[in-house]
Length: 119
Image 1 (tube, rainbow, N blue to C red):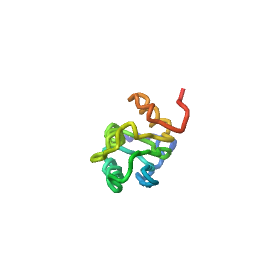
Image 2: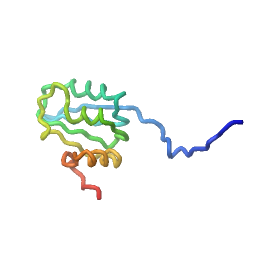
Image 3: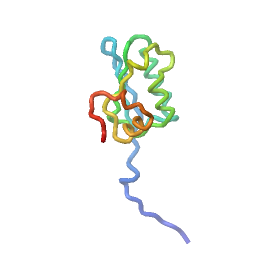
Image 4: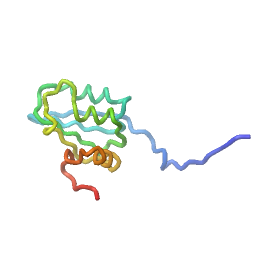
């Protein structure tokens, strides 16, 4: 006897590779992140943060392509290791709906800039 399941591909979309692309513009570092930021990829974000360490005064994360975020990812976003950037100078723009919801549940909605609150 065998069991077979027919699962629609909409429930299991193709995985998007993780990318953390830093771009320094004056004193503002923007890191564009796509894919899934979790315990398996957080080291790649940390590498992107360290690649321009000490050369910026504010940090912005562009999260339009981020589909998943876990607690290790949140920690890496909020407290870049060896960074002198205060939390008040860290912002998040264009989070996807699931990521935005997680940030709101963690009471981090004030960090989100450039879009209206979900309602």
